[in-house]
Length: 274
Image 1: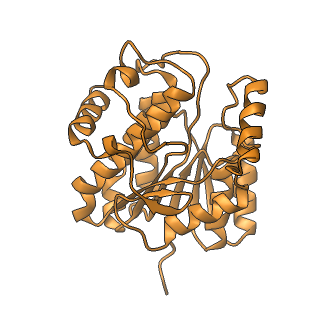
Image 2 (image 1 turned 90 degrees about the vertical axis):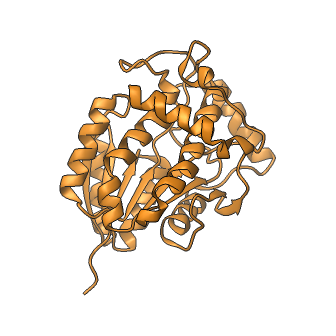
């Protein structure tokens, strides 16, 4: 009898994370649902179990590195063999504000939390020859960032900050593959598409979200939740290229800076010091 596979999905209590959790449950996965809202988490767990999988809710504050590390230890205790980690939680924030760890919130949620969680779960991932899927929505081919824009005096809120943070996560994805691929862990990055109507950008003014969603629909850039969840499932469970950047589920070349190992090293150093 095959051993049941275990998946962890952050930001799994709404939107795309929720859809991905339910899709994996239908495939028979045991899904660890990570989020802040216990009530929404309990609802996702209930529906995941009804879909045929096992599920548990794990509460965590992804803006706190101490709590992310605690979460990592809890997951490792529950799943000494971890088949899949989806770093789905993310967001953009209109105004600059720092977390207690000293990071601007956009960087904290989109980069620091995934980094800390991956580092905490390397052994369970290696034991299962597992996979990490990092969500990097909205990274254009010409994206660039400096360390000062991410963690220094020039860090700020807004969509520009979000794009730079996702570029940083894509850079770490490719760097992790180089460092840890030999241990059997596969790292990939996924842009699942632009999906109007999710909780993404909830800190952005409603009028601006409405305009952005209208533009996405007008130029046929928008995807449905079901379509995006299908992309999650294919990249999470199907054949992939290690370190690959999957744009709407299709492999494409990443921005040039994503392969800058000096940039990746600087990012790791900044994250390790926290």
